[in-house]
Length: 424
Image (tube, rainbow, N blue to C red; front, side, top):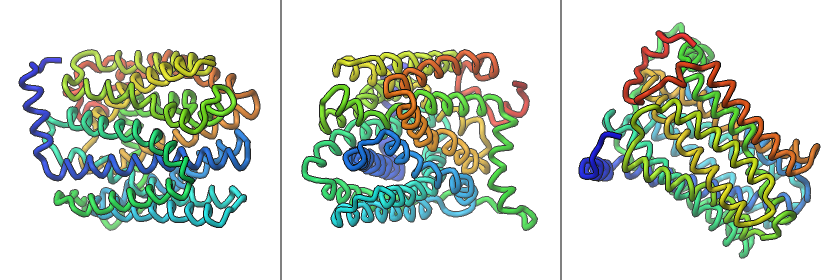
């Protein structure tokens, strides 16, 4: 970390003088806030109707399947169509999903299949939005400011993650209709904010012989040739897939800790408390040396904290474990989110980001399904412990499989050509 405090303050302030960057982080805040508010309400409502851990797993699966189907094509679209309009349209789809949940609640539907259908629409919207939104940051700021801009964006994201579950739990006291109506308004706000951005994404011309399928999978082939990018994405993939236990929080809140929906909101917010503290530190002083070693260490801490969370029967200890999980995960996310744009040619960024989102973003939902199935088969606590131990195993294995990632020193030294030249 080479910057002095005065320089760090000046360069951070310069980011907030960029109009389009401010609109971007505002949209990111509103969208994440709505997503988290909705997730608290849907999780509690579905568990209240079914009292089934497996049903909570299906909440994640319903969102994962459309992301599996549409994220790669969405990455190709993000490289071919102005990303502002893609995100705006996806925000309206999210609003439609919230409206559907309002209708289901008003009609007192006891068939959770329709809830899963609404969540599938929501997952489709997220799949369309994610590559266009995530690959927009490098267009808004100078390259030298990219790491700090990502840290600011992450701080904004984590702030909404802190507020979202707490607001969701509080609003749920007034009924799910209030929750979903709030989400509908927030998703419309995302669309308006992106329509207000003036920066246009570069649309890359494609040769007439290039098929849609070839364009869509080009990101996968590029990642396969880049051991640094492949290692970073796959490490977080398996950490989230194995260590994710968010789907089981309603069970901990109601049956293990007995803290109700308000306690659930605090539990959902706890990881973000740790994450936002770390992200603010990264805004002030971005990572300097030994980025690869730091990434592996923090994923290991995430796995260990997951084990503590799984064993805890004390609400305060649970919150502390969740906070450590969020803090350690934030470091890993910051390194990966900075590394991938630097290691990827601009004309490929939408498609590479789509692969990242498919294997990282969608793995949250698949991880929720994994947790729900494991809890149904083995019990809630064993399911969490299996995930934490598995995460620690992945860290050790990936350090051996991806030495190029382990040896990354300064993130600013990573170049697109580096992935092609390094052997794994």
